[in-house]
Length: 299
Image 1 (cartoon, rainbow, N blue to C red):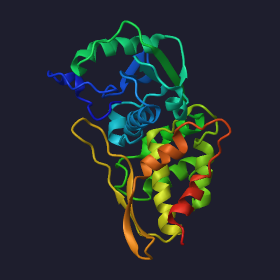
Image 2 (cartoon, one colour):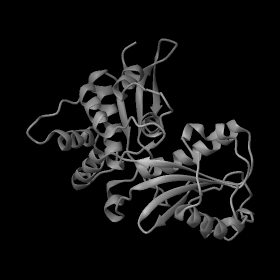
Image 3 (cartoon, rainbow, N blue to C red):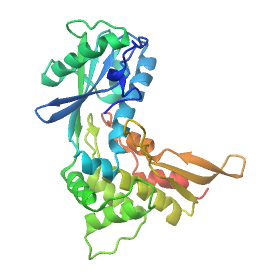
Image 4 (cartoon, helix red, strand yellow):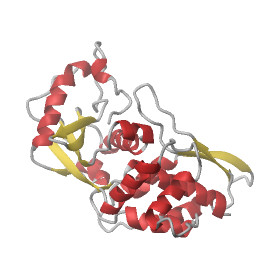
């Protein structure tokens, strides 16, 4: 999955050199998929963290936001790891939030080096023969989430936001069965999170795209039906490179001035950071239902 310059290798004119390679590389080794971000230059820890976070979040959100039509045409792939290939000294503190650890070269990092050599001239670089360091974090998905995703792909037709509330209902039925009528509330949101979420530390806790989008949809339903907020769903659109826009709401919420205002809620990004990005050692986070109460509850 590529970051904003997804058509990089189609360009004939070199791009200005930047500290990070402008796209996250897709790596396929005998059907085993991984991603790789590339660091060309040394940066202060906070700046490197911020730039790498934008790249990693863009890659993950692009995958999590894929539409049912895209998933029918291009079958989903289970990505097993994220690599960072560094050609400069890296302050490990900049990588801590991503649970990235140094690792030895393997088939995926070797393939990444081949891609880097092929693209280096287009970003005004000359790739060294060997990287300064290789980092890796595992990407894991629960068996329950994969099973629910298969069920969702069988019934999902419209992109996120086209029919507000429908994906949440479909996910609830896939989880509970047809004979049990789901109640769209915080308890259901928490039940779903318990089935598809992960508490394991030090891994990217991936949720398949249609399950993730239905979970986002559920937050909007709870905000509207349980917390009484006016919520509008933005329908996902697809750009010229085939990348879908992430789940987004607009909600009418109270301001510090005591008035009400329309606020854009990038719910896809919020749940990516809340439910998908790695947990640090000893870290615990509230449930998504508790987060929704904090964001949308009456004040």
